[in-house]
Image (cartoon, rainbow, N blue to C red; front, side):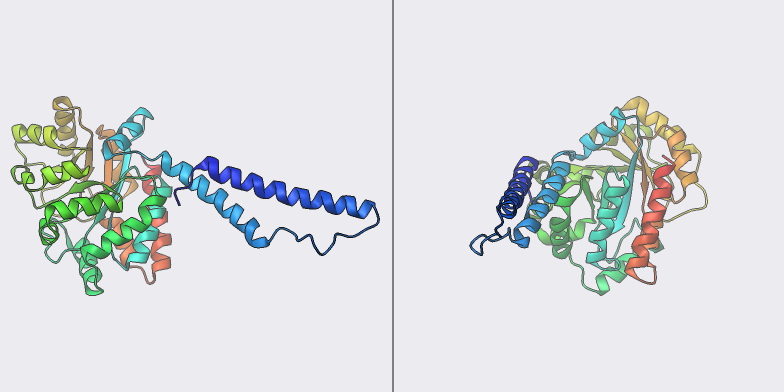
Length: 331
């Protein structure tokens, strides 16, 4: 899967030359009034197909070679291109892990800058009814951390957007901090967000995350004191996640205008990118966040509901893609 573009191109060229040589020999034989002998066999269709597959794999390899090496780099590229980052959230395993895998690919193709992958947990204190229900559905079918990491390892070689693991601390402790961070990076994760760890307690996992190469994303809220918010901005990696409401996740009719002032305050105090999430569900919400000067827009519950509550996985994927395209078009 990691064949270089040049190697794949060479394989295709060789296949084409072999086929062309066969055609030339047949032409010469026909001109001389003879037919190709049984001793000469046409190039086997399987080899032709293999050459075509190698070309396709080479093109994918070239795309993946262009992928950002970190969450920070993804935001830097976005800024350099004059764009606002789109950061979608999915709950792994809802409705199943195969559908999650396809959903990640769709989000990546649709223009996701970074993708948050939520690990289902039985007591998600930061999540509202939509994501709680998604986690319950995933857990009821059996979706432990191990399965989520295995799925991520399968899909990550085929996408460009860096993955940020969104997980509560208990599943990490169950694996062991060092083991979890190592496994997450091996599976292709680039970042980590642990919503139930306050800033001071991130030291429980930060050394292991840093050693493994995981960037730790921290949260701030509208009621976070200014000095504490500045400290969070200093310690966060990749971007700062600014919660737009005083409450849990969930799609809302409107988002508070005072968050715009917070975005401005944070950007004046820090050069870290600021992405706004919680409650953003429509193109109008996206436009408002962009008008505040935010570096990124995070959308979770609206996508989770569209995918997980559809009559079938296929319908859910199609509806999620349509919603994603609408949201991206508003950036």
